[in-house]
Length: 344
Image 1 (cartoon, rainbow, N blue to C red):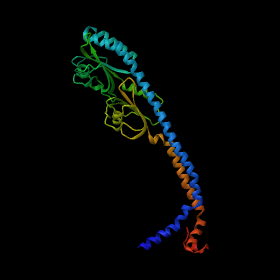
Image 2 (image 1 turned 120 degrees about the vertical axis):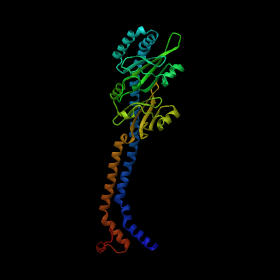
Image 3 (image 1 turned 90 degrees about the horizontal axis):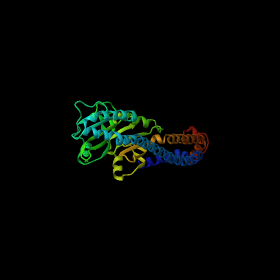
Image 4 (image 1 turned 180 degrees about the horizontal axis):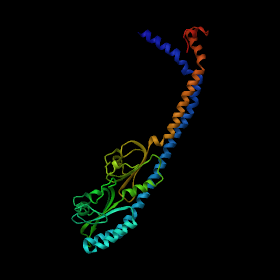
């Protein structure tokens, strides 16, 4: 048995080793080694370029969100909050609040709805139709924090179908809640401003987006508001337990480079950061395969070139190598060896 294996191995070496040592094939491999080294450098450059593009896009998304939220904050402070407080103190001021609602619709198309709740959590006024009977949010998390803990304002992703008659796929909205108090500082109710998700999505879509890039907007509890490309099935889902959110919770800083997609943990070249001044998180990422698509294409071409060189070199060296094998077998270099099936 051992002798048979030895003879088989010896025969295999005699037949195929010359192919591996063929000078033309070696020259082809050496020629392409330099190309492989250059291609690996290009890999690093492509990665860095993708990272720069993602960083730039994340800053654009941040600026867009700040530009969307900033005017709303000012309008709440100057108009909505004072008018809502007066309504809770005197129902006779309702016409004034209605005029403020009209002004809001004219100036701020990104605002989808405004609702005023009294101290018991019952809706007493709204800029759009509300649920019938009027919605009661006395058990709501943020209402209780405004009432019991003195929280002045909050921004979060919420389900608008719980307060207004919105049941469409865009019912998950970015909401701004404000504590309402009287002159003595006592809690008298809550103001809730709901932003139009479709407006936010259209503003993100109008940016100079990278082909294949994903953009996601979360509140700081990990709930998804909107993503691009659009997937309504993910809106409102909480991703706080994903790898990326756990890492962010541990490090509390901007994450960049090779990071997981927060929605499915797939690898991507991305950025995960907060919006300055707001409890909002954005994720911008490019799937690593898509970012390095051109590099993979060049690698495939180079591999095919190497295979073609080796095959062509081996074919060209077939007869000299066959003579070398015959010489090893002790049969000389006449044509009989070929007829007997020896050689290559």
